[in-house]
Figure 1 (cartoon, rainbow, N blue to C red):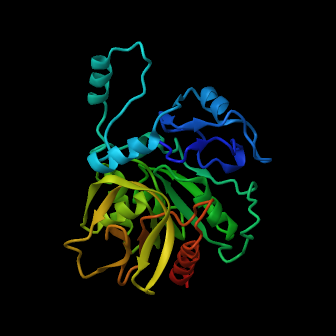
Figure 2 (cartoon, rainbow, N blue to C red; figure 1 turned 180 degrees about the vertical axis):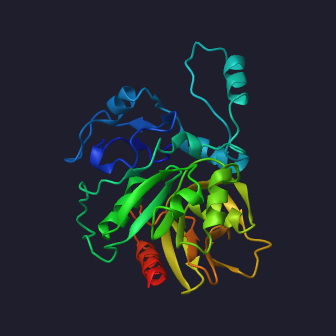
Length: 322
């Protein structure tokens, strides 16, 4: 992970902001690493936390020149090595590493088994809890799910059960869920074969909401294809056109693959378009209760333009149950 902001680590780290139980990236590269956390909420500093997690950090790099190179040459495999390793050996290790195309990384980061989400830790001042989802039980397929996706459902009163990425539709249908959320996650969506099959098998049987990788899996189940972006969509403030309302949402994004909207059947409708590169950012079925978005409505730092999609999902589940 490469940070283009020159100063990293001023805020420090604290468990309340974690979106995962562990660190999945192999390392990070920064220009200047703050020696001390300055936030009153900090539970520790970034350097110590990364060392404790046995992750590599490189400081003093011209990160913006690296990013400019990536924007010209495209995202590529890379590595962080000590100065004592010969260059040819380092290059061989990088070239022999796993390519992102064809990589089913979701199966590596998913949970080991199904479990109920504990909502007792919900606390977020700008978003009060509501009861619109009371009585609804949501299955969340974990392809690398962010904690705040689970929290947003819980904040609305839903019971949430998290399921592994290889869960079958038969397993989901027998447990009486009111809806299924297909989560975000890493890797090549086309390689997540069980997730695609489960999404396809559930069409028309339960309301489905897909976020990021979940959007791509729904698109693949609809017969579309996905492709690797040259350098992905990363960070906040990406403008997305909602074609249904003709409004622009400012979004948070983090994905390296996108959906090819060509050859879309008449049963489906493209609902959102990225205004930077015209890629598909949203999809819905014209008659079934299935919709998806490519970006992150749950993004904790914001923007919060898209939080209402959780309310829409609850409305879809209520409508299906009535």
